[in-house]
Structures are given as structure tokens and as C-alpha cells.
Image (tube, rainbow, N blue to C red; front, side, top):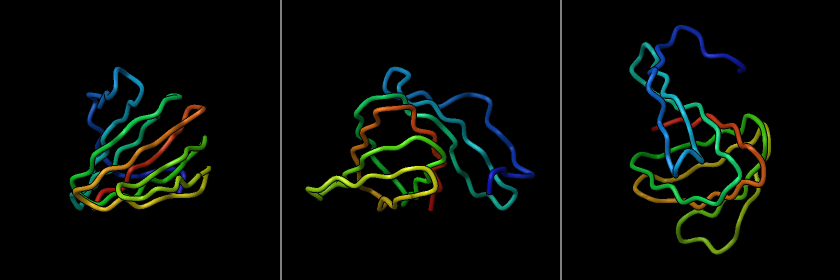
Length: 103
């Protein structure tokens, strides 16, 4: 799906890591939320509260989930899952556009 219809968008951006990651929260009528954002070239560590699915819209990244020793690569059209109350390392060599699906 290339668009989300009938949503509300929180105007205030979520800005992390000195601007290396910027996203906006979108809210659906059923109460679910997603974020749509960009990670600039960098290596970052994110903590999760709830489970997440990171959908790659464009660009690519390497990811290592908490407790794993190997990195996995993801490109446009691919996604990866992160358990709740966990963390993941992400490394991007180019701008990485994503949708984060919560829950």
C-alpha cells in the first residue's frame, strides 16, 4: 500500500539522535498508530516498548536485534520484526525511509 487513507497526523515531528531520525505519528480511526520517517546515514540503537514491524519503503539498512550476533540486511519492500521491551541496532549508509507498525 503506497498511501494511508482517513488518518490523523500529529504535526509535531518525533526527532531522535540529533536529527538523524525524524518521523511523524499517524493515527487511524480504530486507535492504532504508526510512524512514518527517515533515518539519515548513521548507526543507532532503538529501544522498543511494544512489538514493532519496521517496513522498508526505500533505501536499505543493516539490523541486529538484541541478543543476536549476526546482522541482517533489508531493502525496499522488506520488513523486520522487533519484540516488545527489547532493542535493535540499525546501520544505514543512505537515507532509509520506513513505516513503523506498532503492536
